[in-house]
Amino acid sequence: MIPDISDFSLVRTQDDAPFEGVPVPGLRASYFHRDEDGRTATVGCYFIGDREILRAWGYADEEHCRHNAVRGRDGWHPAADGCPDVQLIRDGQAAVVGLAVRAPNGQWLREPRPEPAGGRSAGTPR
Image (cartoon, rainbow, N blue to C red):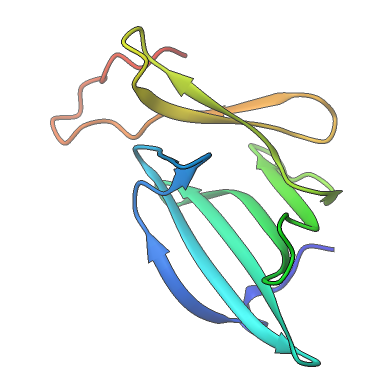
């Protein structure tokens, strides 16, 4: 079951949030926590623009996520055990330009980068 973040407290929000230690342009992450019997339960919500694409949760004293859920165009996929399967998308110069997330059904969900302020394509590969 996907956690209801209204039961948690917002700790921080980060723009160009990192995955694998590398900032991802256009990815925003909001981190939440709450106390559960002396342990800190955590939830990370990841957004491209205003659209949430991924939620990962577990406990602060554990190295990896316990569960994750991916949101496709038609809504949330069922929650899966462990950390999400994420791939950084790089341009021809090896710069990170986006993020792809694999849903439990094996389908890769690719989120395009938000367009630059001028409204023209940034040339991000699709």
